[in-house]
Image 1 (cartoon, rainbow, N blue to C red):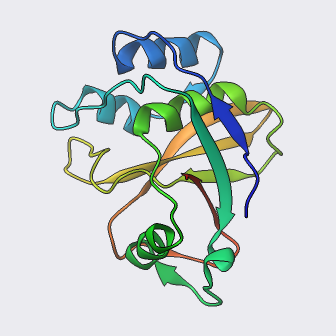
Image 2 (image 1 turned 90 degrees about the vertical axis):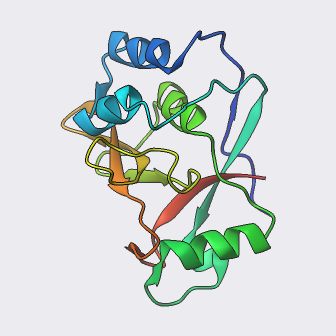
Length: 157
């Protein structure tokens, strides 16, 4: 059993734009893709109103010893009783991960097609630290995207 990585308490944002404002106010670099996704009317990013426990899990811990697709990873997560992280929680968690090592990029398993940009490309968020700064970026989340055994995802139980 994996231990809890972070517990995220609810916050009374009216909408996801308030979350983005808070991230920027705290000097977190929000990528143009995140901003585009938030503005895209196709996405209805809701604000989670309950406490959420997050877990980090390596692709290898799901039983993959070779590169595999996001679709296979999501199937295995579901089989092992893990679930995807709501987009608002993934974005907010950047505020609570100050101990991140330089050069690390940590991806979130968010529901498929929950974060689509205006070019109609699906994304999942990832947190990074580089150049002495904290980032929230994205990675493509189409079903055939390939990930390696050493890659890690943040999930819920």
